[in-house]
Figure (cartoon, rainbow, N blue to C red):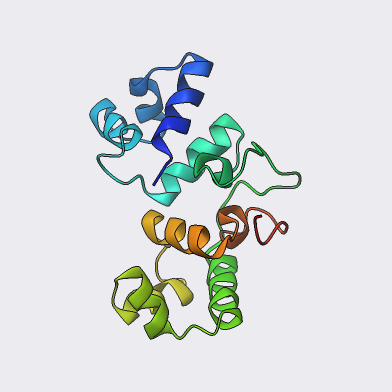
Length: 151
């Protein structure tokens, strides 16, 4: 994935330390450092918080677009919208839960958990889906209503 460089650039532009950002998302400076260097994958809930803090889109952080911010975006993640949009995406692309699970190298139950709102989609799975299908991560997570697909 490619989010570390964008996070670092935003942090440096704002003149904020890794320790301060770590405190904002309730992790240690070392944990934040590992997120920024992509030694560890940052959870979506933390990534969403940082996007809101820096006032940028997830698509921008993931380097899917140069658009830093969309109009009419929602700050909070809604599991019910996410499950609906994930299911719609899967059906539009004629993917069964088994097929999508295979593409993401996870068990079918993981997709079932996402589609039933039992758990929030993991960052690498969101990234993979959006990158492969040119889908907006902000759209899939319910942060925006458009654009659904990126160019």
